Amino acid sequence: MRFLSVFYFILSAISAFSNVPEIPGELNTAKNANYLSPLEKEIIFEINLFRSNPAKYAQDYIVPLAKNYNNRLLHYPGDRLAIRTFEGVGALHECVQVLRKETSKSLMFPNPVLHKAARDHQKDQSKSGKTGHSGSDNSNLRTRIERHGQWQKRIAENIAYGNTSARQVVIFLLIDDGVKSRGHRTTLLNPDLKFAGVACGSHPVYNTMCVMDFAGGMMEK
Image (cartoon, rainbow, N blue to C red; front, side, top):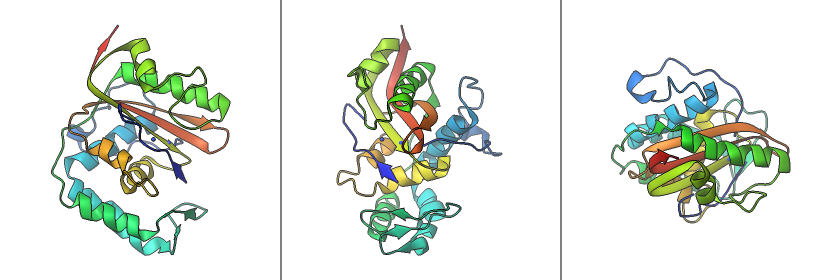
Protein backbone atom coordinates (compact mmCIF):
# COMPACT_ATOMS: atom_id res chain seq x y z
CA MET A 1 0.00 0.00 0.00
CA ARG A 2 1.29 3.39 -0.85
CA PHE A 3 0.26 6.93 -0.12
CA LEU A 4 1.50 10.11 -1.67
CA SER A 5 2.73 13.17 0.11
CA VAL A 6 0.45 16.14 0.62
CA PHE A 7 1.15 19.19 -1.42
CA TYR A 8 -0.26 22.29 0.15
CA PHE A 9 -2.26 24.36 -1.84
CA ILE A 10 -3.61 21.93 -0.61
CA LEU A 11 -3.28 18.36 -1.55
CA SER A 12 -3.12 11.58 -1.71
CA ALA A 13 -4.99 6.99 -3.61
CA ILE A 14 -8.27 3.31 -4.34
CA SER A 15 -11.36 2.15 -5.83
CA ALA A 16 -13.44 -0.76 -6.38
CA PHE A 17 -16.74 -2.04 -5.37
CA SER A 18 -19.20 -2.11 -2.54
CA ASN A 19 -22.67 -0.82 -2.00
CA VAL A 20 -23.47 2.07 0.28
CA PRO A 21 -24.83 0.58 3.54
CA GLU A 22 -27.70 1.87 5.60
CA ILE A 23 -26.17 4.91 7.17
CA PRO A 24 -27.27 7.91 9.22
CA GLY A 25 -29.04 10.33 6.90
CA GLU A 26 -27.34 13.49 8.14
CA LEU A 27 -23.90 12.03 7.33
CA ASN A 28 -24.94 10.70 3.93
CA THR A 29 -24.60 14.06 2.18
CA ALA A 30 -23.83 12.41 -1.18
CA LYS A 31 -26.98 10.29 -1.21
CA ASN A 32 -28.60 12.20 -4.07
CA ALA A 33 -25.41 12.98 -6.01
CA ASN A 34 -26.31 10.79 -8.97
CA TYR A 35 -23.06 11.54 -10.81
CA LEU A 36 -21.14 9.61 -8.12
CA SER A 37 -20.66 5.85 -8.02
CA PRO A 38 -21.68 3.90 -4.89
CA LEU A 39 -18.04 3.74 -3.79
CA GLU A 40 -17.52 7.47 -4.31
CA LYS A 41 -20.62 8.20 -2.23
CA GLU A 42 -19.38 5.83 0.47
CA ILE A 43 -16.04 7.62 0.71
CA ILE A 44 -17.77 10.94 1.35
CA PHE A 45 -19.92 9.27 3.97
CA GLU A 46 -16.84 7.72 5.61
CA ILE A 47 -15.12 11.10 5.75
CA ASN A 48 -18.24 12.56 7.38
CA LEU A 49 -18.44 9.69 9.84
CA PHE A 50 -14.87 10.46 10.86
CA ARG A 51 -15.30 14.24 10.99
CA SER A 52 -18.49 14.01 13.04
CA ASN A 53 -16.56 12.44 15.94
CA PRO A 54 -12.83 11.86 15.35
CA ALA A 55 -12.21 10.35 18.79
CA LYS A 56 -15.01 7.81 18.44
CA TYR A 57 -13.94 6.93 14.89
CA ALA A 58 -10.41 6.26 16.13
CA GLN A 59 -11.65 4.08 18.98
CA ASP A 60 -14.14 2.12 16.89
CA TYR A 61 -12.22 1.58 13.67
CA ILE A 62 -8.51 2.33 14.10
CA VAL A 63 -7.64 1.00 17.57
CA PRO A 64 -8.83 -2.57 16.71
CA LEU A 65 -6.30 -2.77 13.87
CA ALA A 66 -3.35 -2.65 16.29
CA LYS A 67 -3.59 -6.39 16.95
CA ASN A 68 -3.19 -7.10 13.22
CA TYR A 69 0.39 -5.80 13.00
CA ASN A 70 3.35 -8.16 12.92
CA ASN A 71 6.34 -5.85 13.11
CA ARG A 72 5.90 -3.73 9.98
CA LEU A 73 3.36 -6.01 8.31
CA LEU A 74 -0.32 -5.13 8.64
CA HIS A 75 -2.82 -7.91 8.03
CA TYR A 76 -5.85 -5.77 7.23
CA PRO A 77 -9.13 -7.68 7.81
CA GLY A 78 -10.46 -9.12 4.57
CA ASP A 79 -7.34 -8.44 2.51
CA ARG A 80 -5.59 -11.42 0.93
CA LEU A 81 -2.09 -9.98 1.19
CA ALA A 82 -0.36 -8.28 4.12
CA ILE A 83 0.61 -4.63 3.72
CA ARG A 84 4.22 -3.68 4.40
CA THR A 85 4.19 -0.41 6.33
CA PHE A 86 7.05 2.02 6.96
CA GLU A 87 6.51 2.62 10.67
CA GLY A 88 4.61 -0.38 11.98
CA VAL A 89 2.01 -0.03 14.71
CA GLY A 90 3.67 3.10 16.08
CA ALA A 91 2.03 5.24 13.38
CA LEU A 92 -1.37 3.86 14.39
CA HIS A 93 -0.81 4.66 18.06
CA GLU A 94 0.33 8.19 17.20
CA CYS A 95 -2.78 8.67 15.05
CA VAL A 96 -5.12 7.52 17.79
CA GLN A 97 -3.42 9.78 20.32
CA VAL A 98 -3.98 12.80 18.06
CA LEU A 99 -7.58 11.96 17.11
CA ARG A 100 -8.64 11.46 20.72
CA LYS A 101 -8.00 15.17 21.25
CA GLU A 102 -9.87 16.34 18.14
CA THR A 103 -13.35 17.86 18.18
CA SER A 104 -16.12 17.43 15.62
CA LYS A 105 -15.69 19.11 12.24
CA SER A 106 -18.26 20.35 9.73
CA LEU A 107 -19.63 17.82 7.27
CA MET A 108 -18.32 17.50 3.71
CA PHE A 109 -20.76 17.97 0.85
CA PRO A 110 -20.30 16.59 -2.66
CA ASN A 111 -19.54 19.10 -5.37
CA PRO A 112 -19.83 18.36 -9.11
CA VAL A 113 -17.08 20.83 -10.09
CA LEU A 114 -14.59 19.17 -7.77
CA HIS A 115 -15.75 15.79 -9.06
CA LYS A 116 -14.90 16.86 -12.62
CA ALA A 117 -11.41 17.96 -11.54
CA ALA A 118 -10.84 14.70 -9.66
CA ARG A 119 -12.16 12.69 -12.63
CA ASP A 120 -9.74 14.42 -15.00
CA HIS A 121 -6.78 13.25 -12.92
CA GLN A 122 -8.17 9.77 -12.30
CA LYS A 123 -8.74 9.17 -16.02
CA ASP A 124 -5.28 10.48 -16.84
CA GLN A 125 -3.48 8.17 -14.41
CA SER A 126 -5.72 5.26 -15.36
CA LYS A 127 -4.08 5.47 -18.78
CA SER A 128 -0.56 6.57 -17.87
CA GLY A 129 0.00 4.37 -14.81
CA LYS A 130 1.68 7.27 -13.06
CA THR A 131 1.13 8.39 -9.48
CA GLY A 132 1.24 11.76 -7.80
CA HIS A 133 -0.48 15.09 -8.19
CA SER A 134 0.98 16.13 -11.55
CA GLY A 135 -0.96 15.26 -14.68
CA SER A 136 0.58 14.03 -17.94
CA ASP A 137 -0.28 17.49 -19.32
CA ASN A 138 1.71 19.07 -16.43
CA SER A 139 -1.53 20.08 -14.71
CA ASN A 140 -1.72 20.35 -10.94
CA LEU A 141 -4.60 20.45 -8.50
CA ARG A 142 -5.18 24.16 -8.97
CA THR A 143 -5.18 24.13 -12.76
CA ARG A 144 -7.49 21.10 -12.88
CA ILE A 145 -10.02 22.73 -10.58
CA GLU A 146 -9.83 26.08 -12.36
CA ARG A 147 -10.69 24.41 -15.67
CA HIS A 148 -14.16 23.88 -14.29
CA GLY A 149 -14.79 26.57 -11.69
CA GLN A 150 -13.53 29.04 -9.13
CA TRP A 151 -12.44 27.79 -5.71
CA GLN A 152 -12.70 29.71 -2.46
CA LYS A 153 -10.53 29.84 0.66
CA ARG A 154 -8.32 26.79 0.05
CA ILE A 155 -8.08 23.55 -1.89
CA ALA A 156 -6.55 20.13 -1.22
CA GLU A 157 -6.11 16.76 -2.87
CA ASN A 158 -5.63 13.26 -1.46
CA ILE A 159 -5.06 10.26 -3.72
CA ALA A 160 -5.19 6.63 -2.57
CA TYR A 161 -3.91 3.67 -4.62
CA GLY A 162 -4.70 0.00 -4.16
CA ASN A 163 -7.19 0.14 -1.30
CA THR A 164 -10.08 -2.29 -1.00
CA SER A 165 -12.85 -0.26 0.66
CA ALA A 166 -13.92 3.28 1.50
CA ARG A 167 -13.15 2.68 5.17
CA GLN A 168 -9.64 1.47 4.38
CA VAL A 169 -9.04 4.58 2.28
CA VAL A 170 -9.95 6.91 5.13
CA ILE A 171 -8.19 4.90 7.85
CA PHE A 172 -4.92 4.72 5.90
CA LEU A 173 -5.01 8.43 5.09
CA LEU A 174 -5.52 9.15 8.78
CA ILE A 175 -2.69 6.88 9.95
CA ASP A 176 -0.56 8.43 7.20
CA ASP A 177 2.19 5.84 7.58
CA GLY A 178 5.53 6.99 6.25
CA VAL A 179 4.46 10.62 5.78
CA LYS A 180 6.39 12.78 8.23
CA SER A 181 4.04 15.77 7.93
CA ARG A 182 0.89 13.63 8.34
CA GLY A 183 -0.46 15.89 5.62
CA HIS A 184 -3.26 13.58 4.48
CA ARG A 185 -4.60 13.48 8.02
CA THR A 186 -4.31 17.23 8.28
CA THR A 187 -6.39 17.63 5.13
CA LEU A 188 -9.17 15.38 6.42
CA LEU A 189 -9.22 17.32 9.70
CA ASN A 190 -9.19 20.78 8.12
CA PRO A 191 -12.40 22.59 9.15
CA ASP A 192 -12.07 25.03 6.23
CA LEU A 193 -12.62 22.24 3.70
CA LYS A 194 -16.36 21.76 3.29
CA PHE A 195 -16.80 20.41 -0.25
CA ALA A 196 -15.46 17.24 -1.88
CA GLY A 197 -15.16 15.71 -5.31
CA VAL A 198 -14.33 12.00 -5.46
CA ALA A 199 -13.40 10.00 -8.55
CA CYS A 200 -12.48 6.31 -8.36
CA GLY A 201 -11.34 3.96 -11.07
CA SER A 202 -8.73 1.48 -12.24
CA HIS A 203 -4.95 1.89 -12.18
CA PRO A 204 -2.61 -0.26 -14.28
CA VAL A 205 -0.05 -0.69 -11.47
CA TYR A 206 -2.05 -0.56 -8.24
CA ASN A 207 -5.31 -1.94 -9.70
CA THR A 208 -7.44 0.76 -8.10
CA MET A 209 -7.18 4.46 -7.30
CA CYS A 210 -9.30 7.24 -5.94
CA VAL A 211 -8.75 10.98 -6.25
CA MET A 212 -10.32 13.19 -3.58
CA ASP A 213 -10.37 16.94 -4.23
CA PHE A 214 -11.49 19.37 -1.53
CA ALA A 215 -12.31 23.07 -1.31
CA GLY A 216 -13.59 25.63 1.15
CA GLY A 217 -16.11 26.74 -1.48
CA MET A 218 -16.74 26.33 -5.23
CA MET A 219 -18.38 28.31 -7.97
CA GLU A 220 -18.98 26.76 -11.38
CA LYS A 221 -17.86 28.61 -14.51
